[in-house]
Length: 300
Image 1 (cartoon, one colour):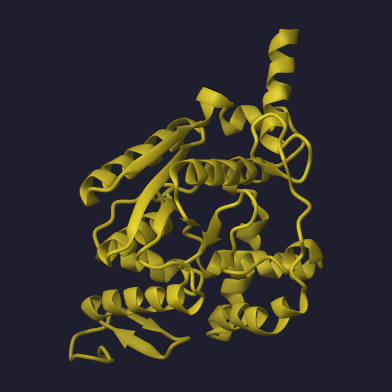
Image 2 (cartoon, helix red, strand yellow):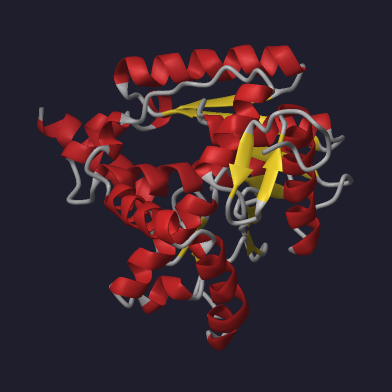
């Protein structure tokens, strides 16, 4: 077997695309494929001011690298989650990468205005992943809006999207089945959110990051060990091994055939009376956490 475009030995063979590529041509293919996805779903253009949510992992850093390399105006946002040494090492990776590419990096430290995820988990019945997701989404939107960014880009890949979709289908979670689009348009108080890596797998992104010399944190978040998404990813990987292309077909057919069946749900949004951010309730979830922390501190 050799690369489709030259006599070189392939660095990867993608069964779902029936495509073998050497290192050089793989990097070119990956970038073209992601940029084509951006244009296909009309995520943003080079005139947009983009805020990339970066965690220090391969997906978000690869996305930030790709956008900057291809002429997009993209700054980074890192949220320090207060998860011990894991968060410190992640922050170091992000700061070093921002310096390498000469890009602006915004940092939000949860411990300064709220509390780290380990402490927040203790005061709520929510899972760590649920609390983390809520706090991150709040800060993504707040920082983007205050900084004048027109779009927030995250590093969610095909494995993330397909596993979340499978979970929602198995549980018939209709509330979320109509909201798995790669683009969540802006609405009152919310900045547009996009997922440019939604059609590439975790392995494909990892190879791109390695070939481009991106230094990312390889360890997973300590709280992700019991996450249900890990289980569904494993199931999909088994199916993919036997039936190549299943993940991509599952996700794309959902976008084409299923999502249009859900009418766009008009969210009954108001403004949090404390912080002013958009919220479905009078007081948003983050401000409720802050109130709970104050109550605990007062009792002590």
